[in-house]
Each structure stands twice: as structure tokens, then as C-alpha cells.
Length: 71
Image (cartoon, rainbow, N blue to C red; front, side, top):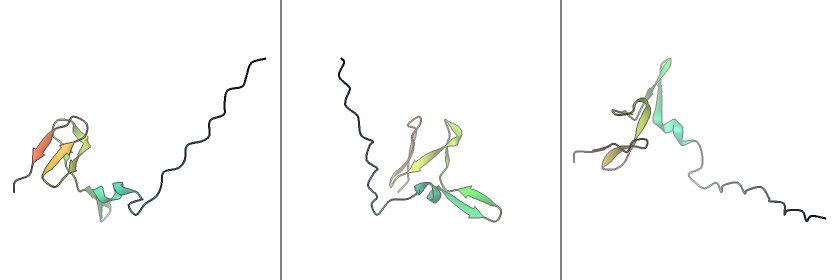
């Protein structure tokens, strides 16, 4: 008779720290009946792909396009 394979347990949920929550809300602001995006779109990828804001640059996570900030 064949031996049974060991049963895998379910993965543990991620620990919730002080930064837990939905961070996507900080990328939009509500004005009147609509909303505005706080980050700009990537000029190479087009609408729908927002660039990440860093301290000294803006970067696209899709194509890795980077613009350095003037300081």
C-alpha cells in the first residue's frame, strides 16, 4: 500500500505592523465629483502606469524609466 504524502499547512498571514493598511489611497485625492492622481504617468508606458516618487527621483516600475529631481 502506498504511503500518504504529508499534508501541508496553510501559509501564515502576514504580520500587521504600524504601516498596515491600504497605501493606494495616498496616490489619489478626491475633488468634487471626481478624483485626481497625485503621481504622474510614465511618458514611455503611457496612461495607466504611474511613476513612484522617491526623495531624489521618479521611477517607473514597469520599464524602469527614471527622472532625476532638480535640487
